[in-house]
View (cartoon, rainbow, N blue to C red):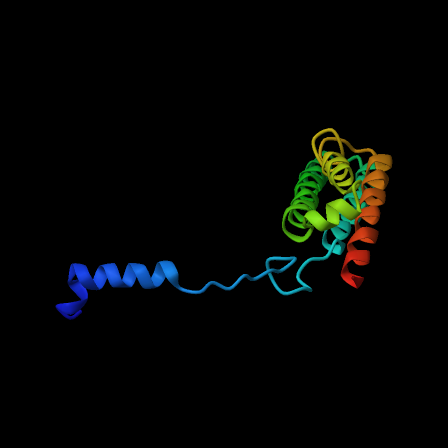
Length: 147
């Protein structure tokens, strides 16, 4: 670095240029280019949960049941993760204004994947409820993609 660039005058000029530099406003509806978000990821995991529940019901082997339940719990966490990514990263205020039920749908869906839902229970009906909520979210998601 040159002696000149260390001077107080140079630093003040640099600060002024930076402060008064023109700014450009940029806007996007998602963090990355479209195509990286998809509710199908949550649905695939929820389908897996439903399948595991059926297999556990048909098997008395305690080792198998333990492994299956562990996997079901992991899949439930993945459902919550995929839903949270859509909720917090893809959907933006204009979506929530147009679809005021979105917050409730996401809240209900993540709870259905949580400890009081598929993560903590072996109830196929809860898995069906979760799949139905994911389908409702997906319908809105695809409507927003058309816009």
